[in-house]
Image (tube, one colour):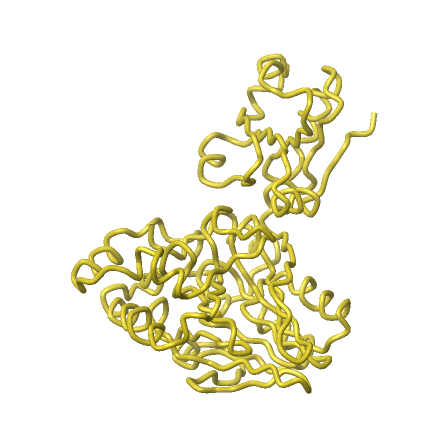
Length: 376
């Protein structure tokens, strides 16, 4: 009997389209509570695999007969066994998720954000299992990639599909929650790799210094990507203004929160920089700019088309982190309200510096789990 399977891409489209789906997650309860596949119209059951080895009878009455059921485990093995047992028990609409949560962690869903002036386009790559957001600006046969993840084939393949040549690769800061694909894409395409120099003092490779006011032009249609020094999450954090319409904020400002300043152990030192960026530099910008962050916390932040972003004017009203008048209260909020640090954050930083080069499987393990770049 052939076990029916589904892919992370198919599940990802259901998340974006808000389609119904029933998830049977057979990982341990702690792993499930820490991190799971999230969809606005999804329903769930978490029953550990070891409780189902002898029989699936304990959960038969808890599963729907009129919905597709996707069985999820860590790597895609245990889910196949449970799927087979459910099929034998009479469930016809049950599928095993290929690659499990490991594959889900790596999936990127491209979403078109907007048409830019003179024919350019802006795309957001949504890493649904990790909450990472990457970007590609295209214009006149050229492209710039911003905050790419290590799954570089997604970006190079997308560029080929759009018939554009990657001319620039940029990171808004030295990431600590995921491994950047910036340097690898630059090596593969020959494009320069841009990093803020204050974040790059210890990197082991050549890079172009991304400084305040740097203006890169993409293609013949002159889509400008202007750098704006905006420290606080890291000392080098740099935002980008794209086509005078969009503000790419990295991990400084999110739709429903603000960035944490402690991932390099410098929370007390950088909290004033964070406040200055949010309460001074950003307030001097046009409120009509659409904020596009490098991460999101939950699907509630998604727009109807699956993209993540809101006008700066809206965030100035609705985002609590932008509305704390007292500086001491702000400092207390930022330094005492922090979630656990990302898994393997120090090794991820060292990898992004080029100091270590783990094997592919270790890189996957380093990134497993939700993003934790925002304060609560």
